[in-house]
Length: 503
Ligand code: ZN
Image 1 (cartoon, rainbow, N blue to C red):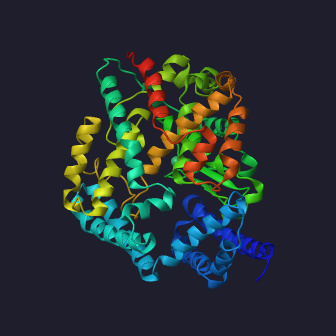
Image 2 (cartoon, rainbow, N blue to C red):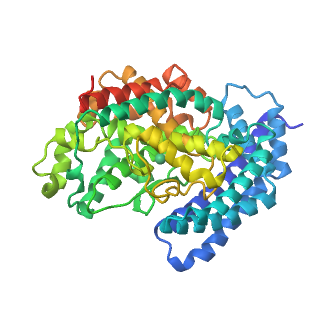
Image 3 (cartoon, rainbow, N blue to C red):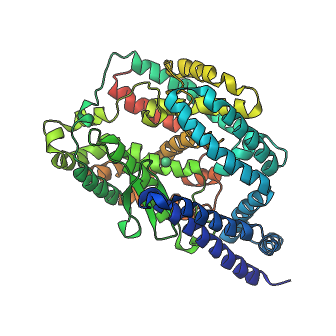
C-alpha cells in the first residue's frame, strides 16, 4: 500500500481535473445565458454533454473510487480538511455511481419535454397539459431516490443532494412553529390598517443609471470585480467558474427599480461566498458552498438584512436619489425604507416580501412531499395548492397559471429544492444575530457604508470553510447554537412591528 501522502497527492490531482471540467462546463453554460448566438444552441448542447460525460466517467472510474477507499481506510484525522475533502468527494462519486445510465438519460429526456409542456400549460392556463408530464417526472424521481438513497425515505434522498444532512422530519420540526408565527404576523399586518406604498419604485429608472448603481452597490458590499463581472440575463444567477472568476447577472426594468437593485445585492451575496473560499481549497471538492440553504443565507443576508434595513438606507439614500433625480428627487429616506419593505400577500413567490416569502415555500414543501410519497395525486394538485394558499396567505389563486404552474422547478426535476430558500432566510437571520453580537459597531458601520467588518466576520465564520462542514455544524460553529427559526421570527416581528405599528 502507498503511503497516505502519496494517495492524497494522487487524489488531489484527480480532483483538480474534475474541478476544471466542471468549471469549463459552467463557463459554457454562462455563455449560453449571456452572449451565445442563438444558432449555436445545438452545438453547445453537444459540447456540454461531452464535458458532462468526461466528468461522469472520471467520477465513477474504479481508479478514482479506489483512491477514495484507500484514503477512507488510512485513518485521516477526522477533524482535518483532508478528511472532509474525501467525505465530500465520496458523496459526489457515490451519487454518480448509483444512478443507472438509463435513468440519467430518461430524466434528461423527460424533463426536457416536461419543461416544454409546463411552459405551454402555464401560458394557456391548462394544468391538464402538464399533469401527465409531472406524473412521469415524479415517477423517475422516485426511482432516483431509491437508487441513490439505499432504501431510506425517498424525499430525504432527494433533499440530501441540496441540503446534506437534512431530512423531511428535521425540516418539518423547524417549519411548523415558523408557519404559525408567520401566518399570524401576516394576518396582523393585513389587519393593521396601515398601507405602505411602493409607487416610488415604479417610476422611470433609466437602465444606464441602474447599471451604475448596481455595480457600485455590489462593489461597496465587497464583491470583487477583478474576479467577477455583472451581465444581463432573463433569469439572474451567480456562477463560480473556478476560484478567481465568480460572475453575476441581473435584469433591468425601466419602470421598476427592485429587480435589478435587490437582485444584484442577492447575487452578489452568493458570489462573495464563493470569492471567500480558502485559497487552499481551490480546485478541490471543498470549493463549494456547504449547501444550497447556506448559499441562500448569504444572498438573503445582503439583500434583506442589509439591503432592506434602515441603517443601510440612511447611508445609501443620498447617492440613490442623486442617481435618479427625476424619480426620487422629492423623496426622503423614511419613505424609501417603507417602500422597499411593503408587505402584501401575493400570488407569486418570486415577488414575495420577507413576511410572506417562507409561506410560499411551506406550501411547496408540503405538496412536493405528498406528491412524491403518493399521498397526493397529481390531478388533485391545483385544489390542494389553492387550499394551502387560502389557509397560509389568505388568498385564492384565480388561475393555475398564477397558482401551481408558476414555478419551473418540478418540471425540470427539482424536488426537495424549495425548502432551501426558506432555510436560507432562517440561517441569514441567525448568522446576522451572531455577527451583531460580535460586532457592536455593526449598525454604525453599515450606515457609513463600511461593510468590511461584516464581510470579514462572514469570511472567517462561513465563507472560507467552503463545504468543509455539514450545514448543521457550520451553523453551530458560527452562531454557537443549532438552527433555530426564532432569530428570523424575532427579526420580522421587530422590523415589521415598527413599520406597521403593531403592539
Ligand atoms: Zn439565491
